[in-house]
Length: 279
Ligand SMILES: [Fe+2]
View: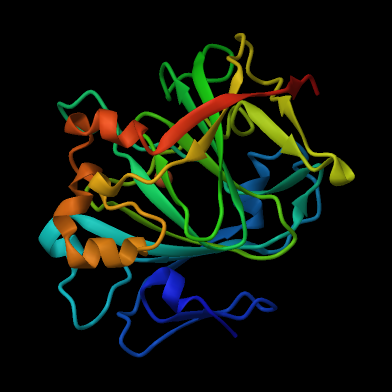
């Protein structure tokens, strides 16, 4: 078992072979969820490809028995997710991709912060003019990729849907804090067979291609790198669980994104664009 406790800030171990996760006795029982192969096929470039029955595991609403439940006291939820390292046909392993709804009366949707505990995550973020428009009509206004490695805290900014891609053969483990006041929404992602870009493994020569289902012109694919934002409780050396447990107030940007817009964007520094090809 690989001990991820010091990175996570709660006692947790991973069996890299079976991808089984074991928590210490002081951890509250989480709510378990899985993503099945059949659910995934609708967002893949190669829907008929060979897939394992379970694609990834989600453990939601985690915490320590000795601490207050921040869902009750601060409207914050802490989760851990485990992803396989395998290809999906021509694509790398990825999540189905989702959006967060708009916070009422705010004009922005709820953000999120991911922390990588094991492996490397590549996040594809996209902002569209209306998540309820299908691929013939929707306009993708911006698209960003950002890589996360162990210890990185990666902000999913308001109004950007996100897909997580595992570009490595091994397991990917991440945790996150998010407002407990909403549920994710999928918009028309399935109708569009995924987000606007696919990352193909290319048998060792990865390349981004446009998803041809999207009919309107697509924006350049911008590349960002992760930056620490101490004001938001995000520094490399402190696990996000600890930041939230020590001072839940530091994470209230997750509940009030409308007043933290500038600081939230300090977590992502745009460094250029990546080449995108036609399929
Ligand atoms: Fe999310």
